[in-house]
Image (tube, rainbow, N blue to C red):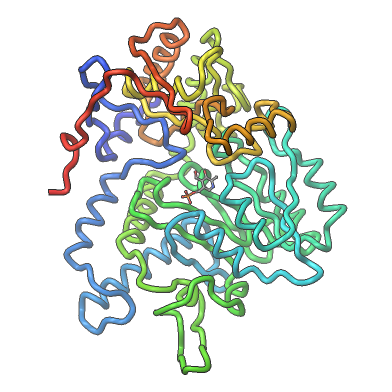
Length: 467
Ligand SMILES: Cc1ncc(COP(=O)(O)O)c(C=O)c1O
């Protein structure tokens, strides 16, 4: 058992809150959906609350509070850049609302040329690191091996075939489905060898591992990284893009408005420099404060300690889950490899819809997981072995309003505060589901695929009211 488990738990807000169950009782909620969003660190809540007494306009105000807010906002920016090892001479750090927005921003600003208009992504990507590129470039998908790992031989062959036409390689640092960590620095060397740059989607990596962009003149360096604060225990709506400043110096901003110009006439606009150039409108200062506070806390704990704790948890979960008959784990199921992946565990419960498993875990055991395709449809289809014809049939059904048989998996994902007891709770609940030992009578909404138990009647106002 990791010594620090209890200590980490105490660092977080809201973990001891109890939630209602179908039998009328309550239990302390077990959140195993951290790959989607994480609860706040207490240090984050406290920093945002302390900041509120000084909250004022950023960048343009003349008063003390405005100047202080500007200082704090810029300090959060500096901390974010330093957290990923950026070089202030070469890189800029800009804020937006999440990873999705930051990737779209890069896509809309990226300097494609007639000869270099290709983006190489992987089948493993979250839709956020695939769809934005489809809008602006020719997109090639590097495949995955049957176990879901990136097929690096395919990556190499695509670079050999398309090399001089590839403008950018865009890959996830860690998968939100299988938890695989990609060899991003090796991929960077290969991308740079053909004159392309590399973006690493760190939404799943940054909360769990040290991200190092590397020296900008090192062939293994990363050119751009993106991350989301709400996956790093700072759920106040901030995302960051850290990357080569030169990319943005000549591109027109993706959004246009206040705060990003030197001078405007009725005929002309002179844009200011990055990062302000790409941050149209008033920024989310509280979100940046939250991200800065999370970074300070994670750095104080040490990302190696974070990774070590999560590896122990993942190894324990893999060992226990492997012994549950009727449960199929996907991806790398070897507990000995836990330190080389993040704690995202996809699974299938034999004979029970992933939608139903997710519902029973929530309504009867107070456990939050995710079920479905996790915004990674191409990857899920590969992992599940869904062929083209079946995929066409599924697509037809979904478009006609029926999601009942949508393929998918159940995903449990760990945060820093999770414990061995959380794993035990999940395993016991899954064992009961497999035995049919649950009380609810569940009805499926075919339009959404979701199941709800008969008799579920909760007044959410008991838990939260605006006034
Ligand atoms: C790997 C990965 N990339 C991108 C995203 C999108 O993040 P956001 O919803 O914060 O924009 C996610 C969210 O789950 C993700 O896991």
